[in-house]
Amino acid sequence: MAKYDYLIVGAGLYGAVFAREAVDAGKTVLVVDKRPHVAGNVYTEEIEKINVHRYGAHIFHTNDRRVWDYVNRFAEFNRFTNSPVANYKGELYSLPFNMYTFNKMWGVVSPQEAAAKIEEQRQAAGITEPQNLEQQAIRLVGADIYEKLVKGYTEKQWGRPCDQLPAFIIKRLPVRLTFDNNYFNALYQGIPMGGYTGMVERMLEGVEVRLNVDYLEEKEKLDGLADRIVYTGPIDAYFQYRLGALEYRSVRFETEVLDQPNFQGNAAVNYTDRETPWTRIIEHKWFEFGKDREGNDIPKTVISREYSSEWKVGDEPYYPVNDQKNDALYREYRKLAEQEERVVFGGRLGEYKYYDMDAVIARALEMWGRS
Image 1 (spheres, rainbow, N blue to C red):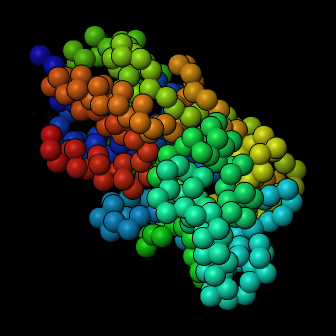
Image 2 (image 1 turned 180 degrees about the vertical axis):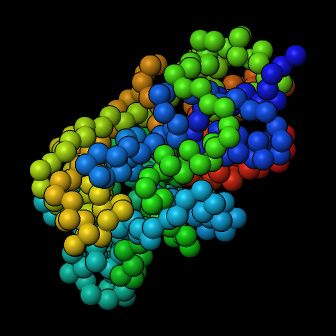
């Protein structure tokens, strides 16, 4: 007889939420993860009294009150507001694109002037139905902002020319005729005090967790331990890439401790020119500390340079490349997944879909409700 009701593969947000709900419902659960820690890509570790986001910046934001109340069961959130800065060859611009951006770019001072400038460049481009990311961006913000603040960054991020990327990628980009520097259009936003790792550890309290376990290497033995499996790894890896490998973008981080209290004065600075090899620099202390006295009381700072790269088998998959070719291949893997009656495929890798954190949690709660 199986020892557990559920075997959950992956101790990230999806797996932790599913495990919490199952245990609270009286089910027996085993969670395994191939990494030496829980929390997946939201893992944070303390360096010089600063919680460092090891796998890239994660800022929680949502309009879903149920999800916000859920995460607040496991952590107290600060009031961090994401206001990135764009650096184009030493010129600094506000992100999201707003009146500060338009003033710096064109010298305009009113929303009417900014709107007129965008419309003038939109008309000059003659784009009515955008067919790719380049056309979509020019239609949204005009050619000047596209050339300085979108093109280089996006091509570094995705490793492809903008005119070969789908238009939908840029639809997430906020454009505002106000002086609002809050990047996210979300009612609730913040970062767990003390970092994400503690939040996920509290989700997993009372749950049996085994780390440094590669499920796919021990699949037969582990599958025999449970009635049902929740799998949050790459769906193509589960099927041993029998139909071919799905494509991802990967990210490499160079993290260093600096012997100074303040490097860039902001949590995130995007480098939007093509020549700078990294996409952005994260200064981790500003996710949790004020930018004046409180932050400067810590005499050191920790920064991470992010480099986007093409993924190959063995690398860490970050962003699904949801173009026509890959989505078609995913649909074929999805057909195979539907034949696995004991297995739930979930999360960013299991469903080959870009998920914000709140959507991952909502999806895990939804799938638990169906199980």
